[in-house]
Image (cartoon, rainbow, N blue to C red):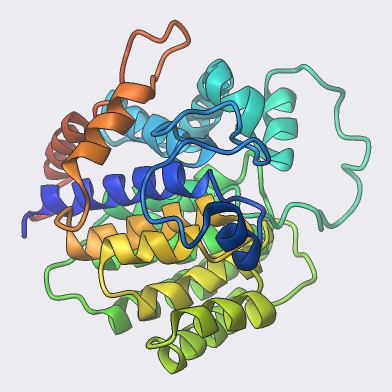
Length: 352
């Protein structure tokens, strides 16, 4: 499998996972089954009682639209990215009404407005913690830092921290994002395995926490690495019983916006999944923040397996239904992005 195929797999997993999961977001698994007559296993039109009710079949939300704009930033900057790059991505993304108005996360929206000077300076800036900034808003867009740094965990972590600091400058949120980027980084390598990908995620958690000990807010809460280990144990134990697996993960790990729940839980789904598309389906039906779990998990498994289990018709629909400009003239081009990002990695001196 070529490196370009792995990038394409990651992009498709993130895109299809987001578009499918947008339909089930916030519901429990039981409510999903009742509302849709069973598990959601394909792209469908959103129903009236979900966040994405204004979307149509194939439209993505904040998760993949931000991944896509980060990809564009890597292309524009020829791979040379820093915190300012990611701040500009957020500002550019906030101009895309179809994503920002309906789909911006609570913390991301506030921090974008602050970057644009549209809200007062934080009057709580003197406090030593930011306990509310522990959502998965950075983890959901961390895959590019992984597939742009195949096998290079440390550079992936450096760029992940730069991406996190504008909106979620806490050790917990950063460690969740680093778990994702390092998992994708490892999944991009030729002789990888699921076990190596899990170990890379755990490395990302621990190393990122070490690096930001003095520069990010230290918040109370569950430890990301312990939650991932718990989720993986459940995934191995119940890999042959999907309904039990989803119940146990939701009950013991959790699947909410909090990153130590949904981001940790998706690693349990990853270890149990049989293909990249199966990973997406598990995430879509896991309950809670389903679009993020399916999108992140789809990116990790897509980098691991490549694009083979994803439908080309789904790709074409997503490209047709989504735009990277405010005037709705520039359709997403996932195939073209994979080609361009692969070429930029060559310029970074990373072997194909």
